[in-house]
Image (cartoon, rainbow, N blue to C red; front, side, top):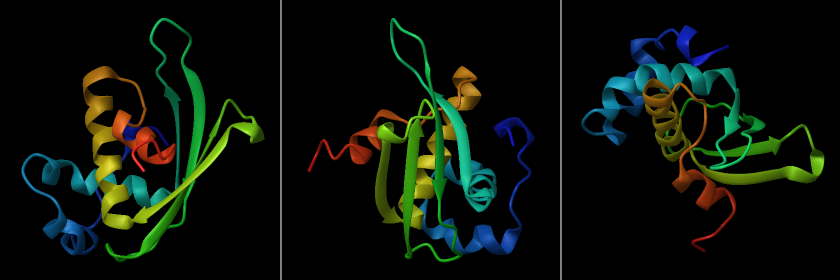
Length: 124
């Protein structure tokens, strides 16, 4: 499902995660939880000066902000270009909020630079 067609998650699911977010991010939380509950996302990694690379992201869905989720990204339908990262659900949903915010601005479904830094363990 496209980000444009997302319906906000129910108030109960949103209330559990609300304490983890501040400011404008709270406005996008119902859509981010709805996206999270789907367990997958298709998009394109933007490459400056080159062609965007398609990806599929999948993750395990649970209901608690503190539980750990494993997100797997596969680029260009190539198993050799698969990466995994684990983090708390609240942190992952924060990245999904940023995906939605970026989509609203640029009309491109992609994760932020900070997500890719975490995925590739650049800051470790």
